Image (cartoon, rainbow, N blue to C red):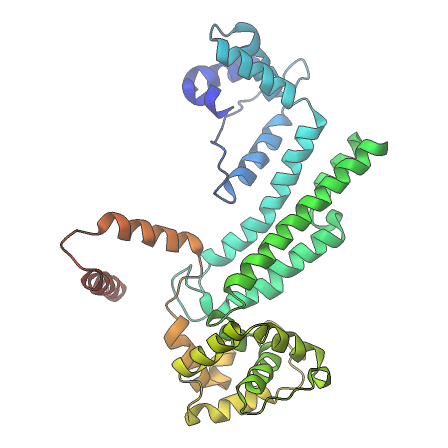
Length: 354
């Protein structure tokens, strides 16, 4: 669709205008991108919305648009593409896939909106690393777990279209494909978070999550102790999960100890904060999503140590990609990396003070 429309956008739009007797339908197309999240999902939503508009002959506007190119275009490739567009957008399996892609975009939209909002302590969006585990535990994991357990909760339009247009073995086959797709997405998210957010040093930010911070800290202190307790079965379940994760291999444990010392979390001045946090017995009471400001007020020294490391770290991967691109294209052969880093830091400070 993008190739047909972008080749001659004014003519493509004029074809749609002639086909639609009432109202104007704006033809919007985007190139499919495998490496970018949210683009394909938004496009799928646009296609479904536009397909609901019918011509005077009660034909979906995009189907009629494709048939026009198939029957009248002098270009061989446009004629072939038009026929494929009309055929594919008439197939229930294709429309089912568009519904799936569209509703999958709701998850990415929510993540994108979270990163675009400013946090309780920072005025710039995209710099919310101190709260990133709140996003993972309170939104991302529950979303995928609910979708795997009952796809209808997270993808009601997809399941309704499936129930209305498929039956018998075909219905079971498509439902199985949907469930496998959701499970694959959840497994990929779990793999990514374990690789980055559940390893030192980023895993130390779990301390800021009140729901899991106390149990996590008790597991860490047990590992850091000179003679760690060996009876793992005696630990509470919420603590045992973290202990097993942090002691799964020697490298993980060594990294935890290294960064604990590097961030000065072993200094005596933090003893009071760590003791108070580790003694929290019922973090589930009250508001689970305690703002980061409350953590700062209750454990000020611990918060200061973590903020000194992670406060200015980007939580939005797109920002990291943009900075990488600027660095790559802005480097000069005769300027060292250290000087470039100082110059970039100076530019950021100057902009912040303006």
